[in-house]
Structure formats: structure tokens, C-alpha cells
Amino acid sequence: MSNIAAVAHHNRLTRQRIRSAWLFLAPILVLLALVAGWPLLRTIWFSFTDASFADLTVYSFIGFENYLSYEDGEWYGVLADQEWWGSVWNTLFFTVVSVSAELVLGTIVALTLNAKFPGRGLVRAAILIPWAIPTIVSAKMWGWMLHDQFGILNHMLQGIGLISEPLAWTANADLALWAVIMVDIWKTTPFMALLILASLQMLPSDCYEAAKVDGIHPVRVFFKVTVPLIMPAVMVAVTFRALDALRVFDLIYVLTSNSAETMSMSVYARQQLVSFQDVGMGSAASTLLFFMIALITIGYLCLGRRQMAGDN
Image (cartoon, rainbow, N blue to C red; front, side, top):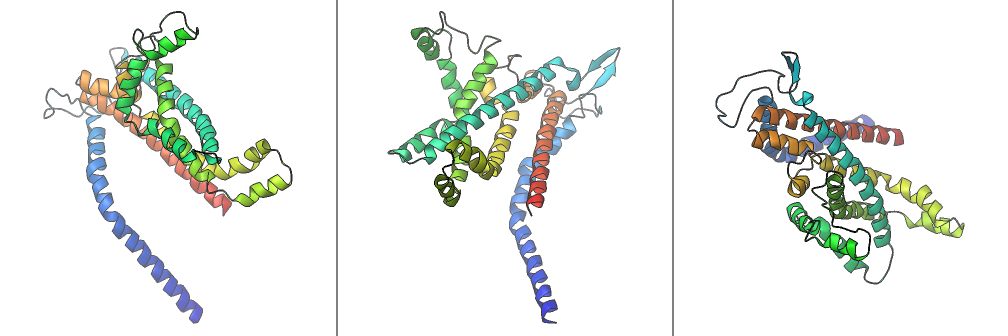
């Protein structure tokens, strides 16, 4: 009977903790429903209408025509627009290249900051400055630095002989996207380094002491010991950065405006919504972007749960 009573008491405590958890979460869930849930539902609804900013009170339901429709021998809608698929390619290319570079550079910076050297605290504070600067301010600052006539970057490159004439970094179709990627790497590498550094400082020291006694090469220790131990933190950092990069807007819009060569999915949605005053098409593009990010997030959560179940 004592064991049965103990199990019952444990189950009762578990239920009480679950109720308390939901009670504490209720206010933030209500706030999220008001701040994020309602606008999201409105956006999804408008994507099935012919709403326009000319008069948002008068519109009709048109089904999936904003997404894809066939009329008079031609396809219409977001999914039939070549500019949309160009923005999808730009966004994916931007995400893969920038996040990969930030992962490599962030790991190098984190390993450097994890070492003991004089002035380490000052260097740690200084490395966070690019990340602390607002994106709009960073974009405007880099816009002047990348200017083809007055920019300091062209002046420096010409001074050391790498280029013979100024380059139009943000106006040249071949350079514009790479310029945006360069600015994003400069700004968000500290974020990646900060997360990886936090995981490095929590690693057990006995593994490294044993490896040092055994005379194992530091490079092998890094790949065989350090990388597996920090991999969960790295995956979190990569996921957060990838989700953030997929919805990039401000950096691209400030540096290159509505240029088709650098247009992201968020910039495309803004163009349809604001420039063309087409609420239906803009909402459809925003909804597609939302579901893409949601699928990636759900996939990551499922993968994380599967790994945790395998470890247990």
C-alpha cells in the first residue's frame, strides 16, 4: 500500500506542477495570441482575397488565385511569378552562404576568446559591438563604406593595389548579393561566437586533461571531443541564424532597395503589399514565407526530440 500511495502522491504532484506551469504560461500565451496570432490569421485570410490598400473595406474571396491560377492560357499568382522564385533563390543562397561563414568564423572567434590571454574581457566586449549595432544603422554605415565614389572600402583596396578602379558594390548585379552577405557576416558572427563560447565554457575539463596526458594532438581533440560536446549548442545557433536569415529584409532593403538581383522573399512581399498596393498578393507571399519557416522549425524540433529519445 505504501508504494501505491507514493505513486499516487507523485502523480498528484506532477499534475499540480503541470497546472501551475500552464497557469504561469497563460498570460504570455494570451499576449502572443493578440500580438502575433491575430495578425497572422488576418494575413492568411487576406491571401485568399483580392484586397487592396485602395479600400480595405471592400474585397471578395477569390480562393487560391493569389497563389496560383490559370486564365486565358497563362498562369498567374505568386507561384507563377519569376520574381518570386528569384527572391526564393536569393534568400536560400543568402541563408546558406552567410550562416555557413558565420558558423566557421564564429567557432574560430569563440575558440580564441575561450583561451586565456591578457585583455580577454576587453576583447570579448569589443567583439559584440557589430551585433549590438541596430541593423538599419549598420546597413546605412556600410552603404557609405561601399559607395563606389566615396566609400572607404574602394579607397583601401585601390591603395593596396587589389583593384584598379572603384567597384559599385551595391549597384553591380554580380557584386550586390555578395556585398549584402559580407555585411551580414560582419554583423551576426558575434552572435554565433557568443553561443558557441557559452557552450565551450561549460565543457568538462577532465576530458582535455586526459587527452593532454595521453599526448593526443589538439586538432584531433577538437574534432573528436570538442565538436561532439558543443554540437547541441551549435545546432541551436545555426537554427536561430537560419530562421533569422530566411526572413531578412532590412539589411537588403537599405543597401539595395528593390533590386531584383538581391530581392529576398520579405522584400518581395513588401513590394507587392506597399509598392503595388496589392494586399492579397503581398499576404500570399508573406504566408508562404511563414509556412516555410514554420516547417523548418517543426523539423528541427522533431529532430531534437528524436535525438533526445535516442540518447535516453
